[in-house]
Length: 365
Image (cartoon, rainbow, N blue to C red; front, side):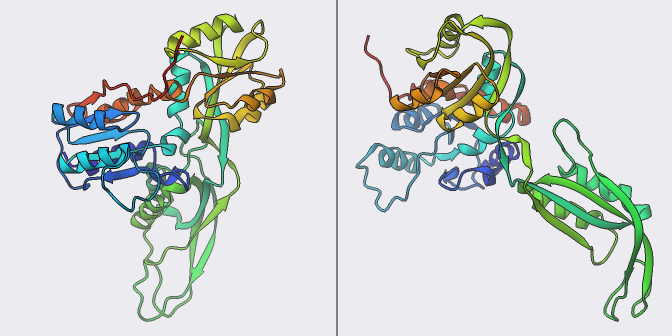
């Protein structure tokens, strides 16, 4: 199988166009046309992980955290990143990373946390804006169904839990082609009036190429009249963090112990009243403190994330319990997520979770 097929599978789930501007996801080493018959999944790429891939004959490593974040001007093996890169390149091992792109999609990193805690009624905590576009196109009446179906198949028309959404109105379109045209209806040089349907639908911005291509393929006209508008609406299923409901109300102390067990935490740092009742839970994998205000506005009883600084605990102001379970601990199940994405598409492709513990943080008791 070509590496590109695996990348396309992952990016259909978590488009690289959704990653933050500072991020560096994508194929970091290797060529997309290279053939691979197995892959290793890890949270971080270290020299030990590359050694593991070598020992098992895996030519592709799929990671959550990109090995390369900033520019590399020299490759001399003077630090851990350079050593891992050199070893991967020498052994013809490709490295692919999906980082913030898989943080923000529905059923991404934070959703995996919610699954592990068996939360229900899970929704995105901090919804992104500016990621929705509206398409308006004018189609001959008898071809409206054909064009609509093509747009829906390309991913347009999804609003929350609804699909195939559109608005349609009829009117008269006019046009006159010059003598270089071959119009679908009418004659060159003559003004023509055609009964048309105005179709309006929405789509995620990252699907614009696919949606417009589907439109042009399905539309019968030689020249297609369409408009694409950027909307400021929130995207219901793209954004950081999640909020969900526990099956039953719990004391905070008991719930925190459950969280400790589920995420195999060595320690949990938290602020707030441990006698508080917990029912609504907000989560964000990685360093998610910036979403504390969203968690409070969502009326969550607790917000669980990683990398919280000392003074940031004061910002909870007894309105919510703020719990830091650790960066690695909050994202560890992303490996399982990658496994599901790839095996659901390629059930016979050999893929394995790394056995290397890459968490750099250790605890002394």
